[in-house]
Image 1: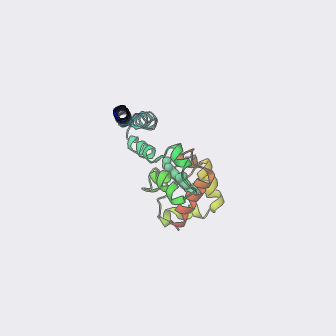
Image 2: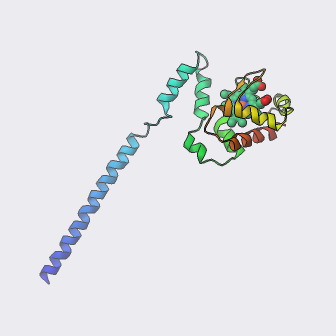
Image 3: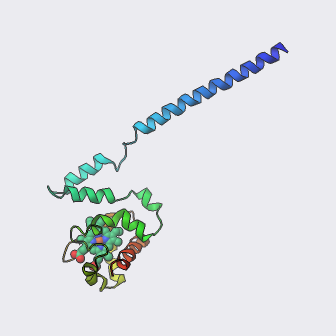
Length: 163
Ligand code: HEC
């Protein structure tokens, strides 16, 4: 009877010991994740470096706005060909406010001569890029991780809300 009791006590002690060890490991892991949160390849430092290289003075805000709107390849791959989501993830950077010569979302007058070209041409220009009278549309809206279907869905979304 006595030896059985001490077996149970030993077992419980072992169990508690490993629970405490696990709690400590989880705490350390959580701490590492939290403090490593800004070690992100698309994070602030990379964006700032790109913005200052790519943009002459005065355009930094536009460049960083575009970069902020660009989603990561992992996010893009997980996204269905949902025109609204693609628009809001990428195209909105220029077509939302209508900056750098991009026809503004919902602006029928601005879109009319684009829409007149027909969807196949608009798809081609959105996919391959396009230099027009007002500015430059970058290929895939500057987001190479978007699929053809995603870019075309975004074109349809913008066109159907701007005619
Ligand atoms: C960096 C800014 C920028 C982003 C981001 C952008 N566009 Fe554009 N886009 C433009 C500009 C500028 C034009 C106007 C070019 C012209 O007609 O002079 C344009 C024009 C277009 C046109 C009309 C092309 C034509 O032949 O008339 C389509 C369609 C289009 N964009 C689709 C998209 C889609 C879809 C996305 C997102 C996947 C996107 N754009 C993201 C700048 C942008």
